[in-house]
Image (cartoon, rainbow, N blue to C red; front, top):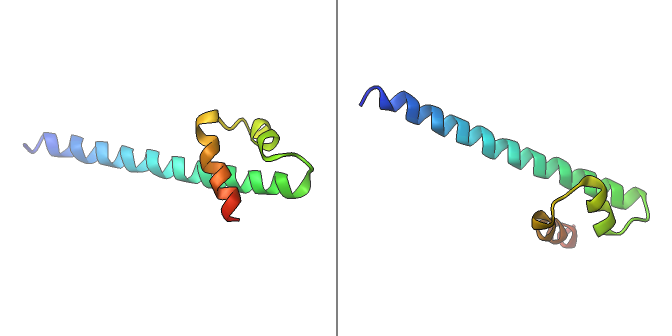
Length: 68
């Protein structure tokens, strides 16, 4: 049991790091998207193309744009 606990803890730490990284990436991407839209005449889809936002993530960013 004592050998499994450190491995379990490390898995949880790694999971938290990954979730935090994904959260930060989404926030930075959202900030970039807002900046591009406010400083250019690009459509939201063209701005997402420029940022390389995958199709699967675009609905989330569209929702964020509606709430801003």
